[in-house]
Length: 206
Image (cartoon, rainbow, N blue to C red):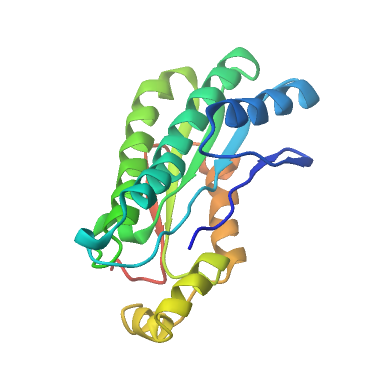
């Protein structure tokens, strides 16, 4: 139960394998070649493995999940920060985490742990590169109607209803609602915000 992962370049698309370092670095390189600089980056990365108790998670699934969800973002951030420092001289990076990164998640142990690791990378990078003018934040979406959640529904048809009962707004988000929060954090309207992991979760963390 894996989703595909892509790297998007400005004004065009470049597909890459987010478990392959050279592919990620090439995506950043192509952006700089096409536009001469890198100003913003949204690391919208995530795959889900079958929902199961910790002892039933397969090692190969665990390794793939962390290669994409955690290491993929780490590699992307390294390449993006270097590109920003050498071209624009500043910039903004946003990582996609999950509301599940804040709490224990029965059945999603490896997924939640990978997203919690993303939070730590985000906060540390914000401290390290803030003096250079690079802002680094993350968003932590709640239940969102993406291809990934459709895969979860196939395993548990009642999952949306269950999650909605835990969400004050009593509904799942549409992808555009997450995208709008992402666009704001990457924009100059959020110019004094860095090191934040922003829940976009309908109030679930309230």
